[in-house]
Length: 293
Image 1: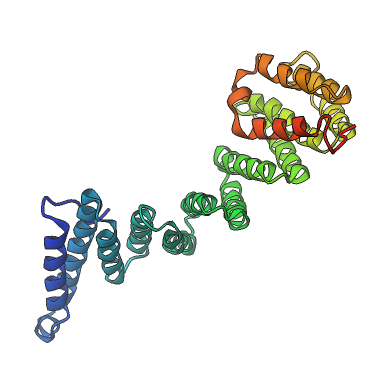
Image 2 (image 1 turned 120 degrees about the vertical axis):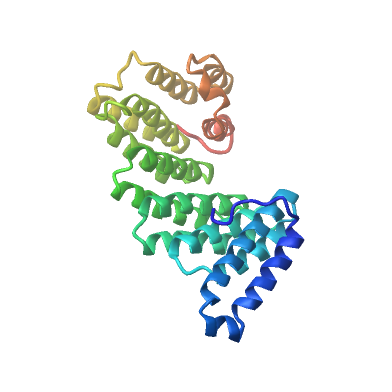
């Protein structure tokens, strides 16, 4: 970030920046043609004051300093930097206030055609909405980020964002939409030499989403995945686990259902927040008010 760091306290740097900014706007400076240089110096001092405020943990001061630097910024890349710096400081004491400047940073990247940077910034905006439990706006940001990454050929990034979308839908109990996202991810990755081994996990999760609806949907989905994709076959650990879970639900055996999860060699699933949430949703329905058969 332009402006660097300084050993001076934020308050001193702010005072120096204010003095320099005042002189930059003076009549004599404009006549002598020194206004532009003084403005650049003032901007650099405001950035240093913002950095110093962060270092001191004085985030309101850093926000104010970065805002003044933003007002003096002329280049789009400088404005984007300041918007992100403002948001970064706001996140430390007022998360809702961080959304607007971070969104403006994303819009600035878009105006420059920097789609990957815009997508990465939108992911950060989505994280803020997630903290505020505003999942609708979170999904809007993720969808736009996914579109930008997809159009730029950023496969890994697009998959990362789409996975987050699927997980969010699953946690919202939007099982059909989550299943569709996982299916799409599996279809996109199954033929990719670097990503194809992740496809089995996506089919597993899509099938579990279907099981959250009922056994018939789960069996239909699983059989379709098996018939369409040689990579996903009966001997795989994922399919064995799914067969066990579906059978336990058909038998209305909650104890067996939970034991299959605890005993699976696919150990990462046991600590996976989204998978556990889906499994808990299914377990609650076994011998409960909803018949999954």
